[in-house]
Image (cartoon, rainbow over all chains, first blue to last red; front, side, top):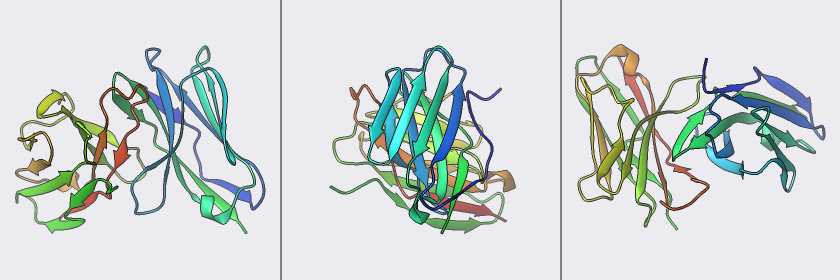
Length: 109
Length: 115
């Protein structure tokens, strides 16, 4: 079992809709959780991190963390074509990041 | 502020040849990471440096991979000899020790193709 599992894609949503991405992790010692966006052929870029249970909002993005269920999610509201990318979920334990395989999102105009 | 710099961006070699990748982290970042990313997968840690010390190299295949960060700034990752299965993107990242959120910043990567 991989340390971080993401819902398999690809995920296709119409422009303006909400894209919902899910992630589970196995290491209960994980302290922080990250969502990276990776455009095709580019390097990952951090879009959000969360370390407390509950929701964290940043613009059109909302991250949710439930440590009891070992579950992290990312909601993208008002999805735009520029949001089309692969989204990587990662957990951090003592400076080690463990990444999921990513979920590819396509926003249809 | 300049980001993480890597070179070369692309490298094509024949199997059994040596290859080296170079990384310059963000100024002031004392933690440096080398990751390997295969197509359709997330990055996997190869080695982590705190200044010039390799503090986690448990995932580095030491029979053919080596790395160094002699002055605690730039780093070089080497493969000798390369195998077909080494074809991947090699990513360098850096972070600031003491950042409780361990925010890592990635370079553009080196895409290695082994023929």
